[in-house]
Image (cartoon, rainbow, N blue to C red; front, side, top):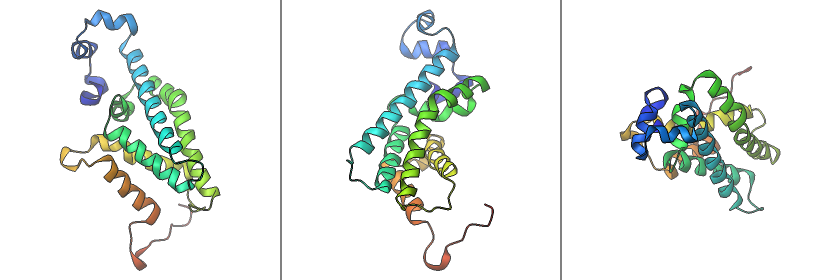
Length: 189
């Protein structure tokens, strides 16, 4: 429901109806809409985190840092675009949440996932596989932000997780320009 209609437009009545339970039954487990949302966000991010870690671990210890990063991009794209459970709702509504709920989610739930990505990027830098002049936090936010935004794409622009991940990886790892058309970063950027 949150994935379809957003935070503000989703009522507990709608959720109960979709789950084929009485609204009062929801209150047995959740004392408010925000408590339910917090749990949905936590579970969605936990499942995404586990999916990404599984994809990275499947590569084995001999994988390069950029191969691990590429696997993480693919896995995150799958989690968001295929949206098996709460992941799409998480990506869609986090910006719509009341400040306190959003801040708690970022502080408690998102931090470990961000640390996973920070580690992947730091490992790639330490291995000499990505440039030293890039701000890794900005790079992480660009990667995750672009993948998370796919839930907002119009239907005509929807692509498979594999295609989205492959294009993002090509743009990140190889750039989008050809030949002499590369642009140097501006000083102080």
